[in-house]
Image 1 (tube, helix red, strand yellow):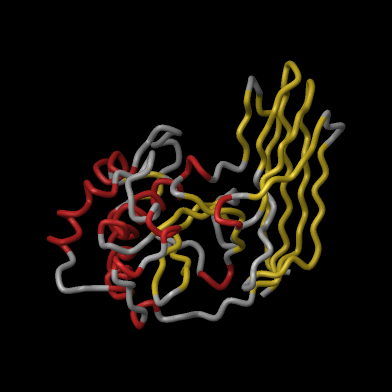
Image 2: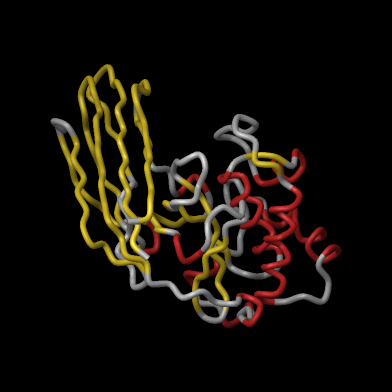
Amino acid sequence: MIVDISVRLDYAVPEATTILLQIEAAPLLDQRILDAKILVRDPIYFARVPAEDGVGERSWVQSHERFECTYQARVEIDRPALDLATLPQAPLHELTGDMVKYLMDSRFVPAEKFHHFVEAEFPGLTGGTRILALRDWVEAHLDYVPGTSNAETTAVDTFVGRQGVCRDYAHVMVGLARAAGVPARMVSVYAPSVDPQDFHAVTEVYLGGAWHLVDATGMAGPDEIVRIGVGRDAADIPFMMVFGKSQLTEQSVEVKLA
């Protein structure tokens, strides 16, 4: 599958302002960058740095008066559909050191608070079978309602309120998976079936010795998702962090099948 991506960001910045940007698709074994171009209008400074877990890159940008950026890419996805139900979870004592952080509480995901719920509602299930049951529960019990959450909303807030956007669905899914003893991380992505089109957030779970994508909103299948970056929760994967003042002028994301 080949996906075309087009992004435009236009912000007013009243003074020399530093921005940490992560909008470029990551080159990975299951997604190949066929063509890509990022342009920043008259930057004072631009430099790339590695992102979390070696998945993709971030860019440091300094702009004055106006931050204007366009990104276009064509990505080929080669990710076979797998039945998660057949995949086992690793015994905790066999997890490598870099996996441990994805079992722990993080800023927006207090996973320990979900232990009782997971054990009470999904007894007798393990591995991919349990992950699928958790995903189905999130999709069925949460309503996708833009504007009902903000940058401070946690997985517990969403679990109680039962509504949110992709960020919130992913946080709840990450929390439930970690509570089930499965390492889980949050992933910023592009996907053509997301409505409305925007930067999207999903979950990756570690099963059968590899990471596997799960979209609890039900909008995107693993075979059409383009990864941008990964992290413990939304605090690690913002598409843009502004260290100073800014005002949105224009922002658009378009993702479509080639």
